[in-house]
Length: 410
Image 1 (cartoon, helix red, strand yellow):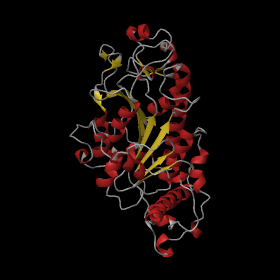
Image 2 (cartoon, one colour):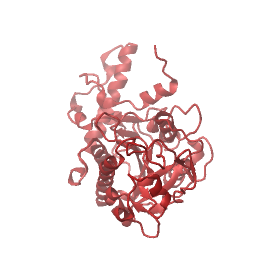
Image 3 (cartoon, rainbow, N blue to C red):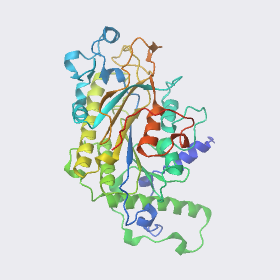
């Protein structure tokens, strides 16, 4: 029998994929209570974490258009300066498929942090993703994710569900020791639940242990359904979200924020390792995959910002991306790139420092093909915790880290 670690078990239990649980009539608790919804809606600050799955190549996201070393290292997949989107005041250009994101930067609602990574980087998808999601470099990562630990100890949340992941595989990021998070794989399926038929398990008499476990699962399902049904009143259908898993997840996120559900933190995902799907793990045919993924990302984030700006919620929302790792400077023989180290981090919101931030990629600081980091990603987490959520970062992170300022006080 395969041994399951405590961290794996807790991450699964805390981020239970509620929409995949079978619906069994008569076992549901009252959905509004299960979701922690109340007449007093949440109008505070929210963070949305977006995983760019697979390891995004920062060199072709923010292109060093005036550095010959970039062009020598990538004779086939380098982007010509004339193709890129010029960034005023910088010797860099953005990938042309990021036109929608560039417009957000020009409007003052988005930015890109350069040269982000961590010491002694791992090029393993599993290990590096665990580091980003846990917010810890410890060999034995915490059982709860960095935002899950915030929900447990720092948010002051008197609600059952304070973190929601929309789609994708369950991520450690929101895993919570107090089970304050839910993963909702297919929100539209929960719209068909009838809250009028729900009743409490304890009213049905004695419950044995297996039945009790099923009751907990059904309670999680009821809570997720209540959130989804509440969010169905949002205005997301009016905006041009991509008709993809990513686009639908981001739209549901915006609808939940607009309708003031009690959720403080969200997680969505772009890219897939499924056969035939595009991911940021661009070992092969990188140009075509980037064209698709960056356009989808830009379109989705732009719709997200436009919706929340129209509903006057944008100033209380911060969206920030992460990816498994960066890519190597040199291209491979299949017009792609191999696993690397530092990369870029994209973000958006109504209270961000817009434009390119942080030190530009130094192509003279490359180790084993990968870019050396100049900004520790935990400094971004510290900024979110201290300057966005107003909690001491060291309550959540495993050590004191000086914040890197992405958000501004409003």
